[in-house]
Length: 129
Image (cartoon, rainbow, N blue to C red; front, top):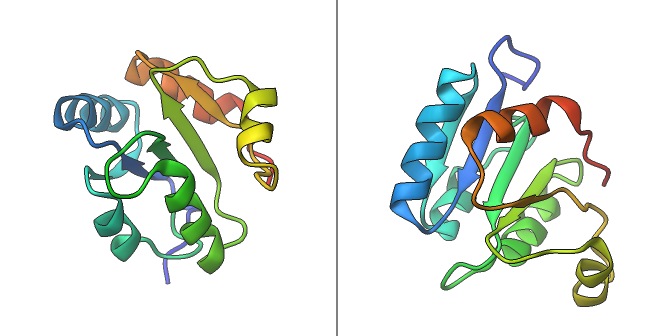
């Protein structure tokens, strides 16, 4: 199995807004990432493979399955998966802890955001889990 130590870092990107998904995917690819993008969380989950992605970036508010639910399912098969949450709503670490007391990662990206800023965030911020 190919791991995420390859030259191009692999990202799994999930957002229910097709326009945002397209812009972020293309922009992150231009910044040297290999991006698998989905606007349907269950389809992203079907595609997910443990130890394959450098980072998973998921929107929080999505119909059917929110980003927190998706992260829990991913962590069930890969406890070391590095998940970042994105939202257009103001998110604070203390509030996230209240909503999800067992959440061990607080990688939060506030939208709107450019692919360049997301790429920089990925390169400079470690995700604790």
